[in-house]
Length: 67
Image (cartoon, rainbow, N blue to C red; front, side, top):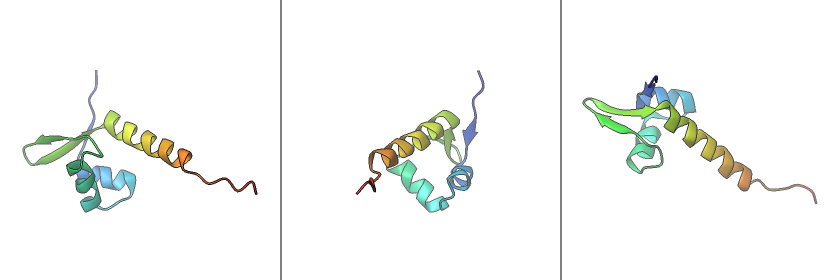
């Protein structure tokens, strides 16, 4: 079993958001992370889940232009 962990800086680069936004998502439990000496780490699977949930949310909230 391989475990891949990302720093908040790496997550912000992957999601193309600010470092501060990534930390806010972690601190408000929108994104799962573990606290380690020197900061936080985000498991690759938790990041995938976050991305997929975001896509599902977007799909549920799309507005149809079938007028």
